[in-house]
Image 1 (cartoon, rainbow, N blue to C red):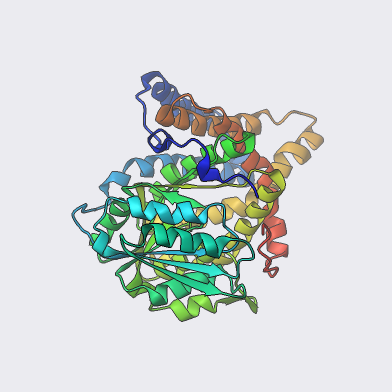
Image 2 (image 1 turned 135 degrees about the vertical axis):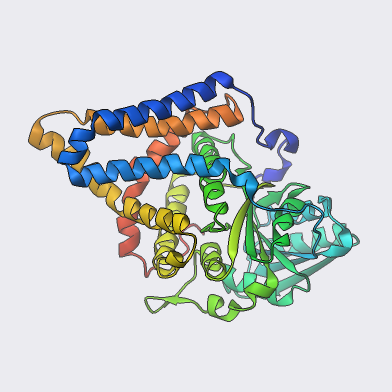
Length: 433
């Protein structure tokens, strides 16, 4: 049995991301933006002459800079910390004996009225000690609030587990927590405060990496998680269009989920039953009628892949779910906020065209012109450097340069997973179990 992650020395307060006032870094950040715009201005003739590359260049620059701009206004999303609805934690689990007890134990430590909490844990056909761990933790904390354990002899899938939790939930808000994720004591308050707005159907919390110091791969994922939530989900949130409320830590208004629960649990795509991408799919159903927002203060920590092979399989599965749900969302996103819709469709175009642009800029164009791709590489580095500077200014010196390496890896290496994801879209295997 592998060492239980939660038995490592833990200082939760130190795990919380804290902003630091690094004036000189922020100055460098804005100077980098100025330099990026200056480069675009000085190369305007090349952009005009090469319309395909020019449109891509302007569009991707505008898209990324707009994410930083929109995320700045995330604080304007209305909240009310005095709003205290009843909540149900739902935790589907399969073969998570190393983490499930700590995941559930964290619920007993939240700063929230105990009489307004219930827990539903689903053992989805585990073949290890997951069920025993569930009963052990129930005995430990069961006097604080109701803990219901559901045991299935055969594995039915995470989506069925989530749906079962919704059907059994007696409370207003359902909070899904992955069986290898751990919430902060104030997480619930910061999740539910957004539901004071009846238009809000789902709220995603801020997920940080629990095993961040294990190796270079987990450190890179830590940086990527922070940027993805603090910039990109914040930018989507001000329009109420967060496109994925991840399973690590997300809350849903049960009443709204029940409207389409049966359609969601039986979802098919290209004639095949959907068995992955449950969180993105559930978000898609919600966002058609309601708003989805992001809570930067609702902290949770999740265990990420520590081995490269496992990580690549996870990313491939995520790419496939992104493709499927993006195709679906594209049929209705135009009805949402115009700016949010424009950003959504622009990102789709950029995602599909990026491999072509990369091949053209790095291989084809240097071959026919016998010159180095200086302009493309400069632009790519500046965009990656901008993410690194933001992380450095917001978090501090901790592994900030990994932001550049991480986003280079995901931009240059992982973008080639998209075509393969498209080809294997009908393959429903989980990939990492």
